[in-house]
Image 1: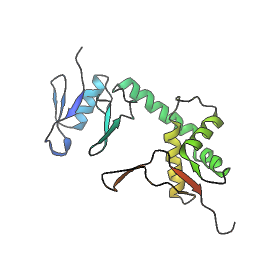
Image 2: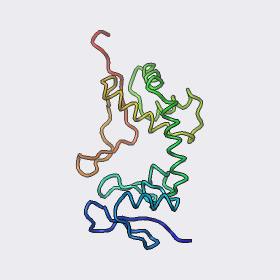
Image 3: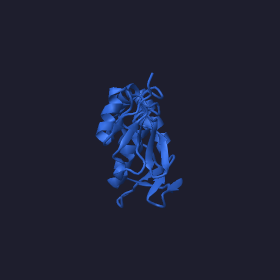
Length: 173
């Protein structure tokens, strides 16, 4: 069985040229993604199971759950879509509204999971809740209390493992 892991060509301008382990040279990212899909590889990590988050920082691919496979990628995308449908802003806002003090992302995700009766690992609850908490933060409803756990590439890229927020109190309270 031929392996079809696609990697960017070193020295290529903007990472446009790619090479597959099967020996095929691919001119650009779109061609590489098509080749990956044709051979049941993830179109995000191109079958490598690793995604480049920032220069010098990689992690297991979140699109295929670190497998490099297309089937897993599609399953994970469907799970993300279902999470977006089930875990709405009103659900997260309701959970946050019941809390008085600071709260961690993991705590809110656990409360949402329990409130909706979801099994652990079935849907990407944490990432969906994180996205909604960041929207609440952007709207000025909550404020982040956490400092970054790790600085990557100076202060341009930061990593929070389990950030903590608190509701913003209005002057009228």
